[in-house]
Length: 432
Ligand code: CMC
Image (cartoon, protein in one colour):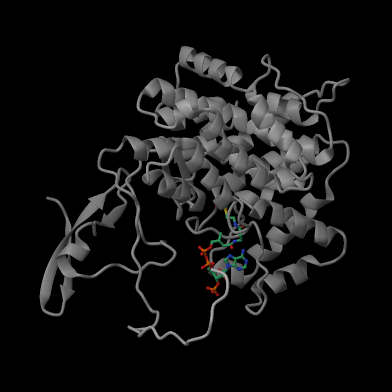
C-alpha cells in the first residue's frame, strides 16, 4: 500500500503521499500542498528538498557511496576512460564498442573551434579568469551552432553533446595559452581525449609534449570523479536554466558560473592557495585550523565538509590514493602533499571537525594531482568543469525529455515592508 504522511493544521488533517526511490530513500510529495492548505515549505538552502526524480547518479552521504547509473565509482578506477563514463551518464547505459568508437569519432570531428570563436580570444584581457572565458565561450557556441538551439531528435542531441564535450577542452586549453602569451596548439585527431587536452595545453610548435600513461590515467580519473554529483549547486543551475527551455549551451554556461564559486568547484583553487600560504611560512597548519574554527573569521578549511557526505567523500579517498601513487613517481616530492596530510591529520583529531562531520572532499586532493601534471592553479576549476560537463548534459536531457517537467519557480516568504503609500517628495529629477 502506498505510504502517506498526515499533516495536522489546527484540527484539519491533510494526507500527503510518500515517494520512494530505488534505494529506499523517501520523500514527502508536496506537489499539491499549497493548493490543499495555502502553505508552502521553507527550506532556504534546499537541504531537505528534492526538486526532481533522477535516474543518473545515486549518493548515500552517510555511507560514502557514489554510483553512476548504478555503478559504484570505485569500479571506474582500474582503466579509467572518461569518454565511456560520459556516454554512460548521458545515454543511460554503458556503450557498446561500436557506440564508443562512433562517439569518439564525433568528439574528434568537433574538436576545432569556429574561427570566429577563436578570434574572440584576441580581445580578451590576458589576465582574464579562465572560468569567465569558459562560460562566455560556451554561451557563444549558441551563436555559431544555431542548428542545435532546439534539440528535438536524438541524433542532433548526440551531436550537440559531442560538440560541447569536445570543444570545452579546446576552449580551456586556448584560454590557458592566451594567458601565457603562447601560440595556439590545435587538437591532434590521433590522440585520445585526455592526452589531446594535455597536448593542446603543453606542446610547443617545435616540441611535442609527451603524455605518460600515468598522467593520462590520472586525468581520466579526475574527470570521471567529477563527472556528476546529482543535484549540486551547478547542476541545479543547469536544470533551473534548462527548465525555461533554454538551450543546452546556455544552460551549461550558467553551470560554469555556479561552479566558479569558492564554496563549490572554486574550492580546489582555495585549497592550493591555502597549502601554498602554509608552505611559504605565512600560516602554520595549527593556525590554519584555529582560524577555520573561529566563528568571527570568515575563513574556512577549504576542501573540507560537504552538504551530503557526512562520513567520507568516496572521491576524496580515491584521489588521495592516486596522489600518493602519481606523486611518488615524480623526481622531486611535492612539499604541499605533506602539508595536506598534516592538515587532514589535525582536522581529523579535532572535535570541531569530527562533531560536524567535516571530512576531506573531492577538492582537497584534486589540486595536488592537477599540479603534478603542470596544470596551473587558475585552471583547476576549469578542469572540474570539463569533468562535470557530461553530468550537466545528462541532467539537462533527463529534464528535457520528461513530459511532466515544468519551469522551476520557487516561492518565498515575503518579509519586506507592509503595504506602504507612494508619496512624491516634490524634488526635481534631471535626465531620465
Ligand atoms: N571549515 C570550517 N568550518 C566548516 C567548514 C569548513 N570547511 N565546512 C562547514 N563548516 C562548519 C560551519 O561553519 C557550520 O558550523 P556551525 O554549525 O558551528 O555553524 C557547520 O560546519 C555546518 O556547515 P554549513 O556551512 O552549514 O554546511 P553546508 O552543508 O551548508 O556547506 C560546504 C557545505 C561544502 C559549502 C561547506 O562545508 C564548506 O564551505 N566547505 C569548504 C568549501 C569546500 O571545500 N567546498 C567544496 C565542496 S565539495 C565539491 C563541490 O561540491 O564543489
